[in-house]
Length: 201
Figure (spheres, helix red, strand yellow):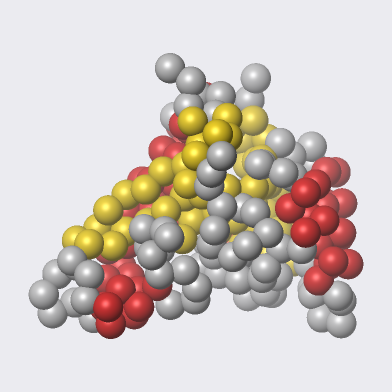
C-alpha cells in the first residue's frame, strides 16, 4: 500500500523536491498528497505547484499555536495523510499535534543529533571545532530536535569551511538522506524500543 505524505515547510523546499522526485520515480513507495507552508513566500509552495501537488499557505497570524496546529490537522486529515514530513519547518509543533500523529512525524536536522540542536547547527559545529557533522532524520516528539533517530549521514568539516560552505554540503547530503530514511521508515516496519528506532530484518 502506498503511503500518503503531507509536508509542512517554512522555507526553500529543496528537500521537498527530492522527496517528490523519489516518490514519482518509484524509489519511495509514497505519494506527496499536500504541502502546507506558514510563509507566503516559502519556496516549498512554488515547488509543490511545479509538480502539481496541492499546496496551501496557512497564515498563522493572530492564532495560538494549538489553534494553528488544529487547522493543519484539518488539512492533513482531509488529504488522508499517513505520514507528516517536515522540511525546514520553523515552528514548534504543539503537544496535541504531536499526539495526533504520534510516531508519524519525521523531521530533518542539519547535525548529528544529539549534537548541536537548535537554530544554527552549522555555525555551532564550526565554533565547537568538530571534524565531522552531518544530518539526522528523526521522529518528532514534544521536545525540540530530540525525537528517536531514524537515519544519520555524516559530513566532514573541511579546513577553511565557512557557515555557508558547510551548510551547502550538509544540504546536499540531506537531499539523498531524506528520501532514503523515508524509504526505510515506510518499508521496514520500524518499532520503538526505548529511544531506539528498530527495523525488522
